[in-house]
Image (cartoon, rainbow, N blue to C red; front, side):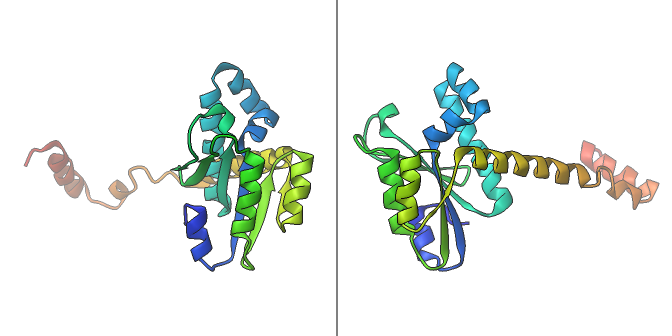
Length: 183
């Protein structure tokens, strides 16, 4: 899966892209608001982790944008857990960066969604051709995908020791000696 916005542009396959206003999600999602009260960095990492699982489950490319007002310096792009994480440059809002990304990523083969509960931003990105996804709608989707992953994992049969069921006792004894370093 392509990791950065630039790599997505070079790939002409049909792609769903979700651009997320990171701090907007942290403020809207109950589980992240609670974590934010204790440790802001941990809340950021938890959001990216949750979105990485969502990306892996759905196949939707996820880009998370955080405002620079919490991080000083130049714009920084990172790929954590295969999710592109962007910290905007100083004096640039996440909204401005998201609008720019929507314009850059606009392509006939791309369906772009923007996750934010900022009503003004929703109208701006809609005007650029992206679809909006309110914070709580994305939260429900992420939660449901996590539940689906858990259900699928539970359905995987326990294959522990399955090879021993097909080996003779003599073969098992030989392998056990090899494993222990006794020949």
